[in-house]
Amino acid sequence: MENPFIYGKVVKGKYFADREKEIEFLTNELSRGQNVILFSPRRYGKTSLILNVLDGLREKGFLTIYIDLYPATTREKLIRIYAKAVSTVLTGRLEKILSELRELFTRIIPKISIGAGGGPEIEYEIKVEHKNLEEAFEEALQAPQKIASRRKKRVIVALDEFQEIGNLQDEDEIEKKIRTNIQHHDMVSYAFLGSKRHLMEKIFHDKNRPLYRIGSHIPLGKISFESFKRFIENHFQSGGFELEEGVIQEIIRISDGHPYYTQMLCSILWEMNLDKRKISLADVEKALLEALAREEHAYTTLWDSLTIKQKRFIEGLCTEKSIRPFSWEFIERYRLGSPATVQRVLQRLSEDGVIEKENGTYSLADVFFREWVIRKIRR
Image (cartoon, rainbow, N blue to C red; front, side, top):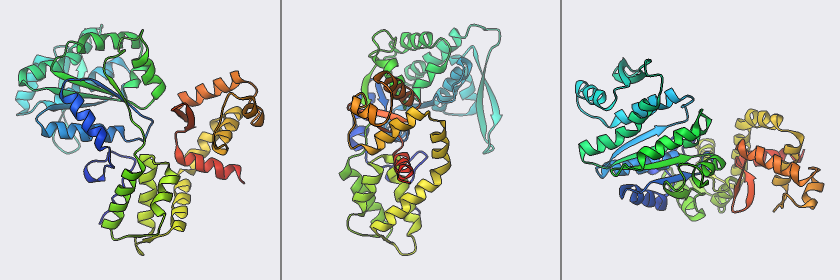
């Protein structure tokens, strides 16, 4: 049996841990025409979640479009990515698809190339004579509604890493263009996904931004202990593993129930104990040390990039059971200078994705980085 614990890539089906409530909620909202905004820290499995939701919706007869905006570094590239993703719902002979594409896009030219698998792939270029990209962008935005009207089927569009539009020039104009177009799409539902909370909140929580209240907000949290315990237990049992009492609790304690790091730790435990098919509490510690060894270069690089005040703050974050970052006791203990300095440290670490704030408390986004820092401090 192959290792069932998968991390670092999209996970589907039986390998996807829980999220049953989230899948049900997203499916219901999107199928009835409601837009949704889903944000979570990196590696929480939001992409796997939405792709599992889209698979289920497709089985119900909906047309689904997944658009990854992470590579959209320019307005032109954004339009090409959008157009290419939209074309995936078109079916039939190549000639029929090309004919429909030419009707949908007059300023975005489809080009056929041979893909890595030997089959045809559709790429796009924007007509140079149209220096103003607004019309081309509008064509791309209007395409899902036109397809839905022609097919007489609801289209579901998932826009992953949506916060990346904030890196483009004239982001406010882009947001206005999106709002102006999609607010009239009665046969299309949109899911906006992002992994940088502070950027997603700026886009969707600011009353002065065009996309304010464009959809219902769904923060994606950690998987519950009971759900993860059941998931881990079932997979190890199916592989014939015997677990010492308390092993699963220790796995979840160390990984803090974080989807990526829980799966990573379980995957290493599976590989390290494949011959004996028995896992003890001591094996969990060995697996953690192996995980930290694999990440050593990345963690050292990150640590070396931090300022001395950022390092001191992180030390406090990892050492204290509970912290009040602006209290003079904390500031003096970790020699942080002043509340203003702490504010700058928090802002920079948050923007860089090193720390995250949830329910008023701060924590390191990377659970294993915390373990690495603790061991570094104890030297």
